[in-house]
Picture (cartoon, protein in one colour):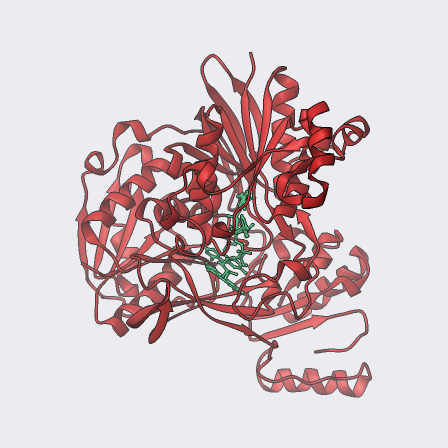
Length: 293
Length: 291
Ligand SMILES: Cc1cc2nc3c(=O)[nH]c(=O)nc-3n(C[C@H](O)[C@H](O)[C@H](O)COP(=O)(O)OP(=O)(O)OC[C@H]3O[C@@H](n4cnc5c(N)ncnc54)[C@H](O)[C@@H]3O)c2cc1C
Ligand SMILES: Cc1cc2nc3c(=O)[nH]c(=O)nc-3n(C[C@H](O)[C@H](O)[C@H](O)COP(=O)(O)OP(=O)(O)OC[C@H]3O[C@@H](n4cnc5c(N)ncnc54)[C@H](O)[C@@H]3O)c2cc1C
């Protein structure tokens, strides 16, 4: 018995380290100025997928990413860690998408993959930080969802049911849900296993068409003729039958009216030294104002 | 029609704080717009639930009371909200940026094909001109959804003038809970749940559920003593706990201090942690200076 697993993975700017040029004047991320990484919680999702594959040999893991051509890096990374294949969804017309347009695009891509038992994604991406895409995809595919998942405890293929432990506000709960479904995985889930050295050797030269320099086309064609797995398949908007009015900026109900850089302002701020006089003065003042005491 | 709606989150039979905070905000937005404030309460054993929300100025409470509606699962709650919205055509819908609000909100936004802005820190009504898809138009009385990004260094104002409802989530502690009138009376509408939620939507079973009351009162504390990574160790953080005890204060921490394991995650303050609104906030770094 085997499962068809889809993993959604986003390449994100490393927002843990941002400078003043992180945003463009139009309010979109200046993706060129920030190092790009595998969205952390998507790695947790990949690990849950790999565990299912360990448990149900013969299962396949298909990774989908929507982004710039260089987001094929995410597919390679997933291949190094044990995914079977992946698609890069890239097209000028897809840029500027809000969560609704992103989820429409990814839902179309999942339909194109066709056969699936479980769709795993991260809880949220560290750039947009919304956690909205998973539930929106589930709604668009007519599936149920389990968000904030910490562990897939068991999966019963015959009964087509899965038992999952998930984080809730102030606690945890265990739920039973039917397959197929969408699961978004929380950062508190098991970390992803490391890359496998043999798989790195096998896939390190895998590329998507959009990544290849045009003058090297022949070299790649020869390589891929010998080793077809070195071609990372790529889809544009037309390949996934996307309705042009539902993708990219055009398909996004939200609009950025203004973007502002702000400097944090306290209502009043003072710097004191560690001298006894200053400390005493502060304490006296706080007591006088009846703030403490 | 075209009123302001708040989805009230219910733990057991109690409306949670973030929902009451949103009712207060919703009341103000409704006043500005000259419309009514309505809310949705879905759960089980909700007799008298309206008493919890009326003081915040609710004009209409939609009650959905049925066995399968507590504990919360996604599909039934999404179905009742979406089907109600198709009838009521709200112009604004607010939800808590909680686990439930972030599970439910996007599901509703997808079904209604409307925009949803996450983790807003301010919500305002404004009129403006804007060009969408190359066509410049004047838009009146729109919801401006203000949200920070990148650790708060950047703040964006998001609008969705062409789609309804305008949806936003807000974290607990961001808006202020304010009673309008303890005797405020609105209308209670008890809905036939089966009419809104087909039997086939009850697909997820909660097998086990464990919720703990918060161990501290950080979000409500008038004084917060906060430490950062500069504190250097768990032991040094104990000094802050001592100081806090003397001041009848609570201890908060920055993300870096939490990541370093100096304190528990539930004491993290800010965008990714607890939102506090104290009278005094004393961040304390390692250099012994007060800020
Ligand atoms: C503080 C702040 C808050 C904001 N809040 C909101 C908000 O609430 N709603 C909102 O819509 N916007 C918001 N924005 C604006 C947002 O940055 C963008 O305007 C827009 O939503 C698209 O996001 P992006 O910057 O990630 O754009 P993009 O870089 O265009 O990315 C959007 C998506 O498209 C993909 N993508 C980009 N190029 C391609 C391509 N060639 N092929 C395939 N896929 C591609 C990306 O991987 C990503 O998934 C906010 C901005 C700031 C600064
Ligand atoms: C600062 C900022 C604020 C924003 N705020 C909003 C907002 O409030 N509302 C709004 O509608 N849009 C907002 N946007 C736009 C939003 O970031 C993009 O639409 C983005 O394409 C998807 O949203 P997310 O990054 O929040 O993903 P999330 O919803 O947080 O992602 C959840 C999971 O979905 C999967 N996933 C998401 N995107 C992709 C992808 N491109 N490829 C593969 N898998 C993916 C991953 O598994 C991911 O872990 C904002 C953008 C910025 C830059």
